[in-house]
Image (cartoon, rainbow, N blue to C red; front, side, top):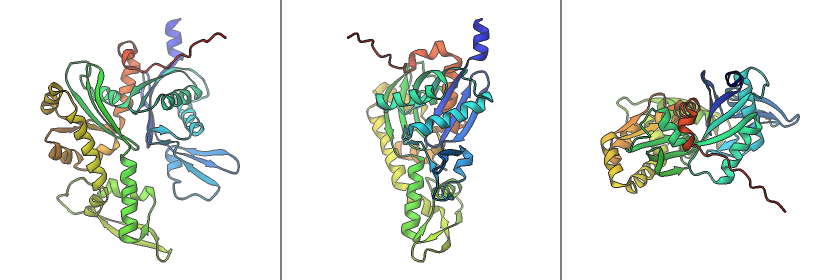
Length: 348
C-alpha cells in the first residue's frame, strides 16, 4: 500500500527564482525550466501565457495586456500570479489536474522574514502540494554542487541569481555566516539600460539589455574586443535608432554593481571563523546561479580577494538539483529543512 501511495503521490523540488522557476520531480529529474513571467489580459482577467512564451511578449504588448514578474528580489510580490504560475507548471509535470503532490522542498533566499516564508509555503500549497518545506538557497546550491556540506570544513557558495546574490559559508550541514544582497542579474540589466540611455540617448528594454549582457558582457577585459548593434527609441526624436555598443562600455555599465557584490563577499570572509577562513584559502569559493556565467567574473573575484574561485557544473540548475537531492534523500536531509510553523490551538 505504501509503495502504491509513493507511486501516485509525487514529491517535487522547486527553485522559485526571480528570473526562472525550475521543478525537479522525484525519480525523474528536472521536469520544468521556465521563466518566472506571466502575461494576463486585463479586459478578461485571463492568463494568456506563462514562462518563456510570456517572456517573449515583454515590451511588445498592447495596453490591455500586462506582463507580470510575480517575484521581485527573491520575494513574492504578486501572490495570486505566483500561485497560478506554479499551478501551470505542476500541471505540465503530471499532464493533468491531479492533486497528487505529497510534498515540495522550495529553495528560498536566506534573509526572508517569517511572513515572506509563509507566503512561499501558502503559494505552493495553494498550487496543489500537500506539504511545503523550505531550504535556504545556499544550502540547496551546495547540495546540488555535491559539496561535502556534512563535514567540518568550509564550503563557500556565491549564488548570483536574477533578483538576489546569496553568499554563505556552510559547514556541518549548517550556515555559519551569510549575506543576502539585492544586487544580481536584474540589477546588471538595469545598469545597462541606464548607461545606454545616458550615453547614447537611446531607450532600450530589458530583453535587449539582457542580450547585451550575455553576448558581450564581461567582468574583465577580453582578449578580443567585441561589439554588438542594438535598436531602440531615440530620446530626442522619438524615432527608432540603431547604435553599436562595445564590450568595454558594458563593463563600465555593470562595474559598480560587480564591485558591490565583491565587497559583500569580502565582508562574509572577514567575519568567518579563522579555521574556516583557512579552509576557504585551500579549497576556494564556488560560484553558481545565472550571474556566474558572466565572462571572467570568477577571475575578477579571485583577483580582488586572493582566493581560488570555481564555477560549479551547470550553475543555472544548481539550486533545483539540491532540492532534488533533499527530496530523494528526505530522511537524511530533513533536519536542514525549515518546517512550516504549526499554529497553536488556543482555547477560549
